[in-house]
Length: 129
Image (cartoon, rainbow, N blue to C red):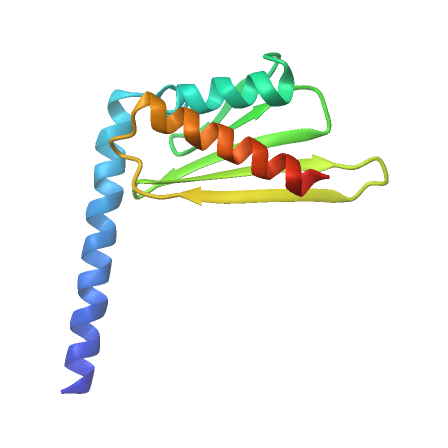
């Protein structure tokens, strides 16, 4: 009986995850990821790279924002959650990483994007120091 309950719970989790991934696929088939989060991308580009950063698409769910410098910002979107990772190499060869996940962003508006970008930048700068 216990195995049946455990199996049922696992099956429910797998089905919910599959539906969320399917929602992502249909959502990203109509708009490119960097365009969906264009306010976040442009704000971080302005603040980190003085607007000289370029978007490099890795796949439908991942892209990088970078310029020829010692830092890169990666965006990964899955199941309605956006993970932003900022990596910076120091002069002595160490790498500093700041990563933050933002949840439930399927219906994000411009103001929310601006708030996320400002928060991520300010927290990231604190971490990079």
